[in-house]
Amino acid sequence: MLQEIVIAGFGGQGVLSMGKILAYSGIMEDKEVSWFPAYGPEQRGGTANVTVVVSDDPISSPIVDKFDVVIVLNQPSMDKFENRVKPGGSLIFDGYGIHHLPTRKDINVYKVNAMDESVKMNNPKVFNMIILGGLLKISPMVKLENVMEGLKKSLPERHHKLLPANEEAIIRGMEIVEQIQKTE
Amino acid sequence: MSEEISLLKGNEAIAYAAVNYGVDGYFGYPITPQSEIIETLMAAAPWKTTGMVVLQAESEVAAINMVYGGAACGKYSMTSSSSTGISLKQEGISYLAGAELPCLLVNVQRGGPGLGTIQPSQADYFQTVKGGGHGDYKLITLAPNSVQEMADFVSLGFELAFKYRNPAMILSDGVIGQMMEKVKLPAPQRRRTEQEIREQCPWATLGKTPERKPNIITSLELDPVKMEENNLRIQAKYREIEKNEVRYDEIMCEDADYLLVAFGSTARICLKVIELARKQGYKVGLLRPITLWPFPSDIINKYADQVKGILTVEMNAGQMIEDVRLAVNGKVKVEHYGRLGGMVPTPEATLEALIEKVINS
Image (cartoon, rainbow over all chains, first blue to last red; front, side, top):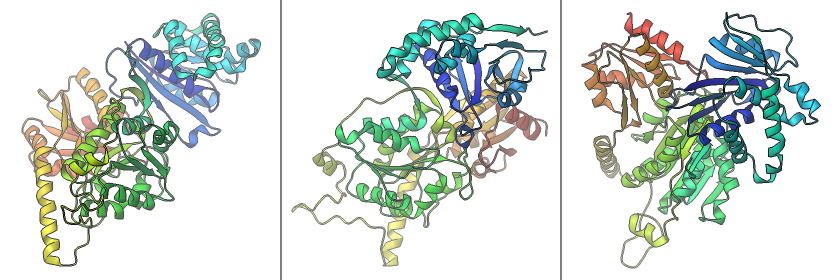
């Protein structure tokens, strides 16, 4: 198993921390992981992105050009990363703020209305966990229980009271993810 | 999962490894992409546990001279910076080499020249292995290609530095510094006692005792006859290091028709290039220098008899290629592929370059 993933959005959407939780979850399953952020001025106002690789074997390159899964959380990220999905790979997006749907026909496309759902749940902060739920539903690379272990590891203890809300958000994401295009 | 495994950035791994190794003092000045080293050390507050000093100096020049002071007392002293900050330290580094003081330097490289960019680069290869400061000197240079090696090379760097009384440099880059991977940190050990330092470093200026002459640490010698002797002694030491301390990794080289030579993060990218190339039927191997000085010339010369062509992959305009060509000595074609100014090559583009510049030419 080798999954090469990029998560891209605005700075502040929880892109980097979502990647970190995914990486921690991989460690909990004794998998190999790498997490490489686009660091620097890109994170201020523009797009932020992180490449996460989860694998059964040692990871060769943490630098990836074409991805198994691309997660885009705003239009600039959609524009930048649509052509970097491997043929037959998956693109996941949040419906909020996306004006143009992807045009490629050789990829699977999924929508998770995480922004709307997080507002409904009265907790906009779990936005990225709803997206993570959608990812885990379509590509179950790590088990939910290990994601929760990973969350516990990556959150300072004083925030552990937030764990149930995060779990609820992940499960909600698994429920609301919808496939809007299958590869031809 | 075993408890000791953590998920850390390369920069964080260096900081924790330094505390665990029992380093006596870190002196630095923040600069992207390596500021997490001093940030992590400040948060870890080792002065409360091991007694390690962590100090943000007023400048890079001050920091390197604090390292000089600590090293002269036989202490495990280190500093870190990125490219433009390392340039500022060069005078101090030359003094450290001239005074034969052991210490650990870390360069998490960013794109240059000048203030350049904060994105990853390997353009300080020449500066590091050919002597960025003045005079005939060498730095023992280690090139980590993973977060684990960022941690491991702290102890290796200090061991080699103290074995030969010479500064050692970890030459990393923004990719390895900023990425997170699994890492197992070295077991914590206490700092050496004053007595242990006196025994390990009889040359250290820790205060004269009645049974010996005063120790003098200096790079200055105005008598050229004596200064030549100093140089010859240092050069003899360098020949010893070249004989004993060459380190490298060979990946799928046994049957290789084509050889990639790359260090640090580009060596990781080349691992993927090998996978892609072999799927297309090209037998490609990778020779990864772990020590950039001393350089693994002999093994590269050996492979020059076996392969049809060599490609060096570097995030610079072609620096290590000069050492590879010297090692190969004209036996086989050596080409270079690189990206500049903070751009990172992709595995796919690197394979294209290998096919175009080496395999099909």
